[in-house]
Image 1 (tube, one colour):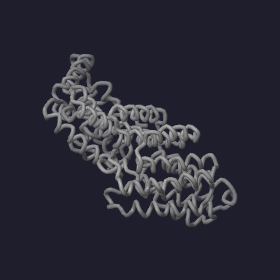
Image 2 (cartoon, rainbow, N blue to C red; image 1 turned 45 degrees about the horizontal axis):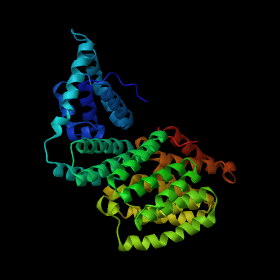
Image 3 (cartoon, rainbow, N blue to C red; image 1 turned 90 degrees about the vertical axis):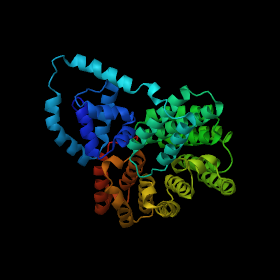
Image 4 (tube, rainbow, N blue to C red; image 1 turned 45 degrees about the vertical axis):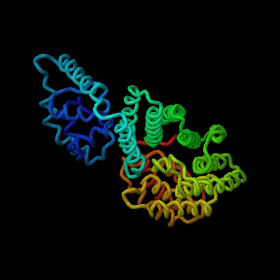
Length: 426
């Protein structure tokens, strides 16, 4: 965690320059208004308010080391200049800065485009964000928060029921993405709270598919907490209202992991068999959320295979796990490179490695982990750290505990986990 000096407009702009972002990109990344960034450029000595101070510090701690080092080098002179107290004193600076930011963020200034155009624009941005599989979790979180907040503000001045339903759906989708990425960043309690809120927003929107998706997220969080009974309780609640087809297909696959955590191989097989009917319905009648938004909100064959791989790993069945994890990898890598979801691909690589360890093939496991161990720190989310920690625990058991090469691999994993800020629950 970097102890950042007090932020000024000048320092904020230096961070923007080090990150190589436009005003619009920097504002979207931070989840603030573009005019606030423009104000920092026009008033470099301004001191952002407490809220923006915290946002900038959090952003500095999430950028790559190269970007952070570049920012710190460039800011040395700026720190000396901007830290000098003004003749009026810092209290006056704070008052003026806070007042200016509150005016810059005045909701009245957002009344420009027509409601219909604004909703359509937010929907298009949500589609792009949901499909941005290569973005780091913190970037997705800040972008989702920005879209969610914009939709929330628009909902406050909208009265038409149809428009409100669309806006509540965007708010729910943004909150759901925030919940998912908060989990990736290691903020478990906050993720659970956001997931609950996303279910309520989906209810307000009357969006059954989104509601089912949020329940699936809550099931996933419960599984990662090793609370499969709670996950199955969410499953029962979700299935009462989930539309047929893809929403139910996803729920069943997540439930297979819950049954696996309970060491119930029979229930795993049964729930995966039941999912075949949902797959047939999904093929003939595509789900609206998946078709219109897609990306993170879609559940195709690749995600299904990854869920099945995780379930068989929990049951210690390396052969079945390897089969499904390889299938997930093949399908993810068939997507055009800019759209490939790095987290799912690396997660599948870890699952392949763990499956090989169960099968007694240490060298194949090490080969599967090669690209994962080279992943930059800012892309090492909880889903990946949790999987890799499981592989590390497996290496501590026989026959690997007395195998020198296996222990070298375990040491590489230990170092990787130590360098990572996103922590799995122990």
